Length: 252
Image 1 (cartoon, rainbow, N blue to C red):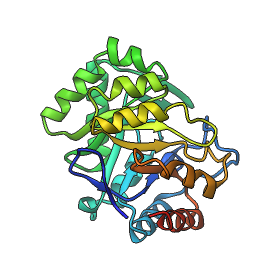
Image 2: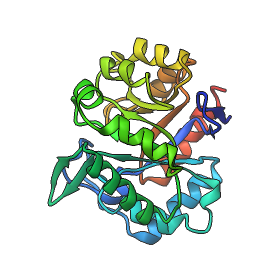
Image 3: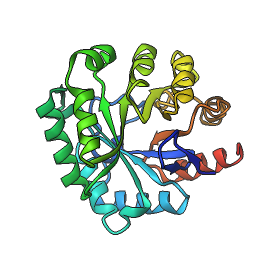
């Protein structure tokens, strides 16, 4: 059930593990409140994901202690995982701040490498603040990511976008794009298809519209499109994880 992630040399399961809930439960758009899991709970959850065949885990500096917990959890199994993280956003004292400068991006990457206990990041994405085109065209972010890739600290680069225009523009430099696509919001579909044709790996976010959409219908909807490679699903519920994987296995 694994699929080649665009023109990268990576193969990913159709379900990827999102990790917002590993480290942050404030200013998130989930319908129900939740407690942040401790290290043992995160490690056990990641072990279950691995048993289910999941091999890509997505995180970000903006997800609180998520990177640190993941780094500890996979320190002995690093080679089994595709790590996707981001640069550009920090979340401290219940507030997001954005920095797309060369120094800001480099500092973010060095911190992520340390927290994740790895020498290279498999997928490094710009963490958009919503102004996709402005970041791409008027900041140092893209140029800096290309430099980081050349130095071998990231194997693949791209952007976690907000808008169809951003997704389309990001396809010009990205190996991998993470875009929103779900039953309530299919505005990215044409841009995703065009990015796919260019050879970009396509990861989806907000597949369940932050918990508002029906799971089976949502997964059927997104995976009927061949441009979609993997859906990044942020959960800390073991039952939900198993159900998601089992549902998707019926589609392929």
